[in-house]
Amino acid sequence: MIIDIGDIMENFIFKKSLGQNFLTDTNIVKKIVEVAGLTNEDLVIEIGPGSGALTIELAKQAKFVLSYEIDERLESILDENLKEFSNVEIIYSDFLNRIVKEDIKKYSFKRLFVVANLPYYITTPIIEKIIEEDLSIEKIVVMVQKEVGDRFSAKTGTKDYNSLSIFLQYHYEVKKEFIVSRNCFIPKPNVDSVIVSFTKRKYKEEIHHIENFEQLIRDSFRYKRKNLRNNLKSYPLALINEVLSKYGLDLTTRAEQISLEIFIDLANTLFP
Image (cartoon, rainbow, N blue to C red; front, side, top):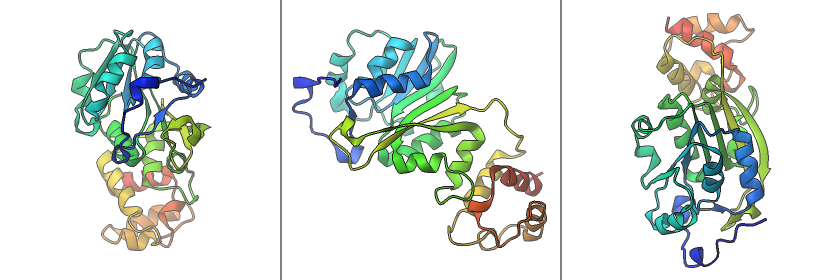
């Protein structure tokens, strides 16, 4: 079944610069909400509601929905599509510039979720902001470009494994849920999408200094084709080699061969 957005959208000019591809298939929308597993005690943050297709289903399940929309031209469309719901607030502002902790203070809720069809061009900055704000989010369910989803869930030693894969997998259990065809959007994008879920880890190994851990990983992946000796030459290499040797590795190893557990060991050794 396809949502008939009819006359209300017929004169709307989609902005490629804002990554505007609106999801129209209600079956997909309902599957996304099912993956989230919301209750009527939860607050959901949505980024980029578009015409409100996903927002409607979220509002049916959650206690509150807080959406961020950068394009003020959508205000009349969203007002019309969401007029039946009193539990939805839309902030017409750039999510990346908001202090989300302040925005959610007025809400009373049991658990916090992020559920969104993310604009492709700023997917990574949005995910990084969600982590950095340390909002104690129970679960994140987002639609992203398929190749981006591959990087989020990439395993050690694969071509898609990078610094963001490690950051995400430290904080969350990452799972690719299902593929969404490009035909489920207007306008139709050039690639298929994937729904990825991030469930908060109940146990995380202690990291003494999280900022140093994150910087170590960024530096390790600074030049993809170079090994750790080259990428980490400003670090105490003898100490790094000592840690690596415990795992049968050495300084000629590249970052994509280093697991999350080894990076944690390295960070805690270098920054006790």
